[in-house]
Image (cartoon, rainbow over all chains, first blue to last red; front, side, top):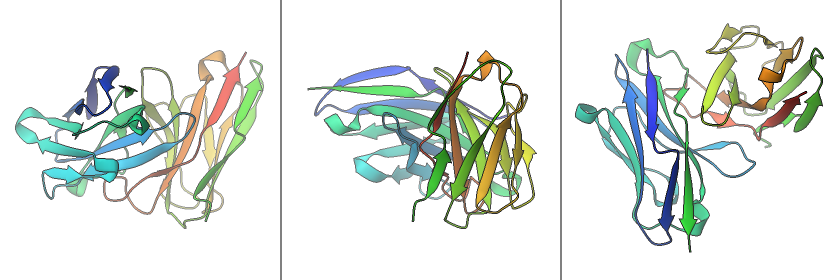
Length: 116
Length: 114
């Protein structure tokens, strides 16, 4: 069975500081991995996804994530936080390859607070 | 192009009442999904559909039913609401399987069951 664990339900950074949101996954088959962002009172929006191509994935709004198979991790980073980055972030996994079920398993979410 | 829309945006029900949540998408997507979001638990898949006339159970299907009579619409029904079904419900759609294509989410429906 697949699962996702996001370390830290709440992360606080200062504006201009590095953003690091942690995600570890468990999957018995090659995974597809995703980061979604949810702004207050809105639906989820895709930030980036890994589908077995380049291990370093660049997304929207300056975010990127690196797939590390040996560490079963897919951490999200941004070099310099902006006030507009304050939101809830979700990591998700889907089974890849021939066993792709088309279903996403989400982590518990991490709320990012950006202080001025 | 409205994307994914959900009706209603907010609803209060009494225990035992029934209701239907409507999801509509105008992107001609084959796949549609219903999730519930609860604090500290992320999103959990309730039911999904891989095409018109098909439905399948997700992670937490008990107490819910769904129908996909038209390709653009995916209905979620609560036959007898319970307080445990208080949640925010999100609908999503995708062109293909979730691993290969992006899921597009609606704005959500907040449901309070008293």
